[in-house]
Image (cartoon, rainbow, N blue to C red; front, side):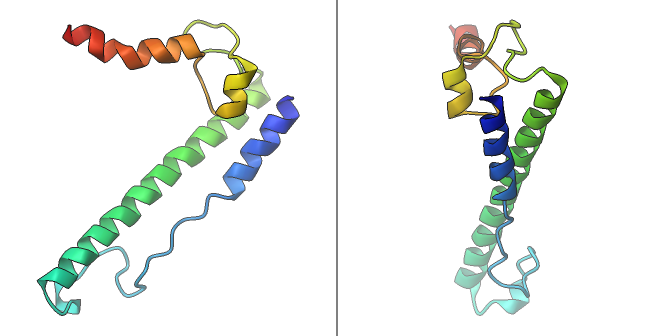
Length: 117
């Protein structure tokens, strides 16, 4: 089963392709002098912001996948980083990069709400 999960991670890693910049002359920096008016400039600023957000998200995803593959190589894959219990196979199939079991993940997600109460 771990071989299938590894292949799934390797495939996901190879499918991460950076988004192409829609305007090669922009080089991720919108220039006001290259825009016809303020509306075009605003559109370019938003477009570049979205491209940067996508790249950051992709870099984060790439790091998660690489960490999961490293954990497989060291024998730490499938073990919860908080409690040390095994992570359920169903969770790993749904999210092969999971580092926490369902219970520890739920505790982390609900912790901010408990502090506010």
